[in-house]
Image (cartoon, rainbow, N blue to C red; front, side, top):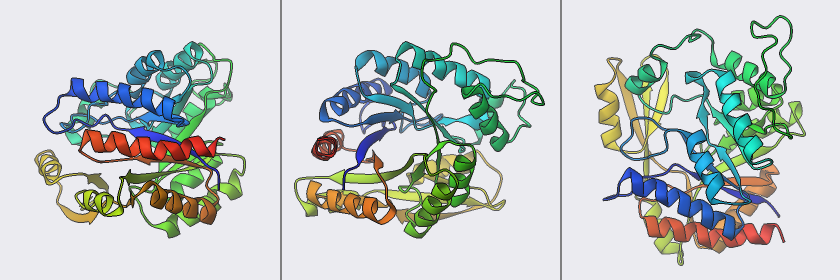
Length: 332
């Protein structure tokens, strides 16, 4: 089955390297991804992290646009709870006007950091009483220039307006998020690398397509390819996710015991930690293709975004190269 492939890059800071090195690696990967035939390249937003350098997707996207020529570039994603929807749309409208047809806006609900950085992002801000759903609805109406007369911002326009309507995507890992995206006429990216339950994926696909059959439903998966099956599986076993569940019911996922301890320093709320392996499709390129083929056929998915949380830079780059051949085959 044919499908398009993209890459989610979190600008990881590899052991012994710096944030400068991490951002140069993102540039290098984006340029290679374009050459290898990937359809899109998205960058993430994380705050006060010693592990990743990507704190501002729109700034990094602007630089990557200048360093590439054809690949679609987007955010995976902008953490909308912190920001004015108007300013977010202005930023991405400007990018899309500079490079028509290449810019995509992906939006997330998570904070992208712990309590201290969240407090810092909101320090001095207004309108913080507006919930996420209202922010998302307002953003979508600004993108389509469709604010109605009852809206407090009626009459405002997010300029400049690009020639094509800016593509918007909601990122999530639940049926509720898929439903929200569909109701707002947005594309949806299901984060399977965070929620490996294919029963929830199945339900999310059905709910989304019932409401918005013409929208794009993309699945983001953790993958790692190597020359041999044993090598890939052995490397993949080294990666864990630590799910922190607070007494209030709120949860956040981190990637190391050190991040759990950092979270502990920034909260007074009791919490529990559950450790589990990353839901990663690891193996030879042929094995990974078979797994993606199965997912594509089972859930009628025609686009995947690959996330490779491997801390060895050379192995990670080689994995994307090996899987890039699948991307080239999918467009032939």
